Length: 258
Image 1 (cartoon, one colour):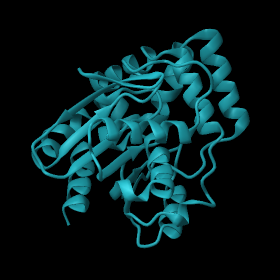
Image 2 (cartoon, one colour):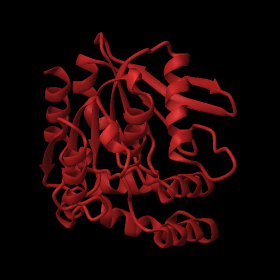
Image 3 (cartoon, rainbow, N blue to C red):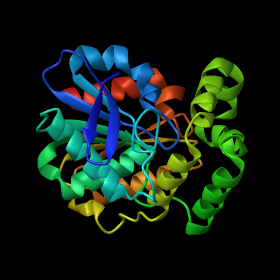
Image 4 (cartoon, rainbow, N blue to C red):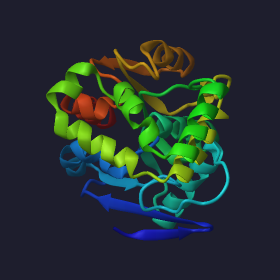
């Protein structure tokens, strides 16, 4: 996979597909851009799809210090500049959705349409994030992996799709503890509830009916604040793009192609 040097950051990315419009896919916490594999066959037929490993994840650099959502958003802008992509569609899940919100507020000229998936303007409490940061820094990624799988997937999916769950858990366990903790801090310190009403991009909000991390009420908050936003629910937990891959991909393609 190619890399691009962006100041202190080396970003691993993939640009694939033959469509004229560009689509950026932004990952959830604890994943690499391979989390979007279920969507790629269909999306790459319609768009130039840019996937990247977020700072601190996968093969991108693990830079020191706690990160911020603004920093992660500026990483996206720098990547777009480096690849000479002026205006793009953006689809982000969980932490990727938080990055999408920041871009929608602070860099609206770079966005065409915006898809916010299984995300919220604020997630969790400071105490819960600090506890997770301490756990991964002292005990490693395996200390949180089982609990994360319970939030990522419904019990039925975990029972029926053992290989997919095992792959997801391995991806999480292979994450850098320091990179993961630094991104936890970015989520911990983010509160965009007062800002999301400034988003002007045409927006689709996707949620999982059984998502314990960002339940439907959080998506309803976003659709109520972002002018003209539409919402849809999938019968899934937090990684709806994996658990309901076909329905998720169809929804994204339909929204971006209208």
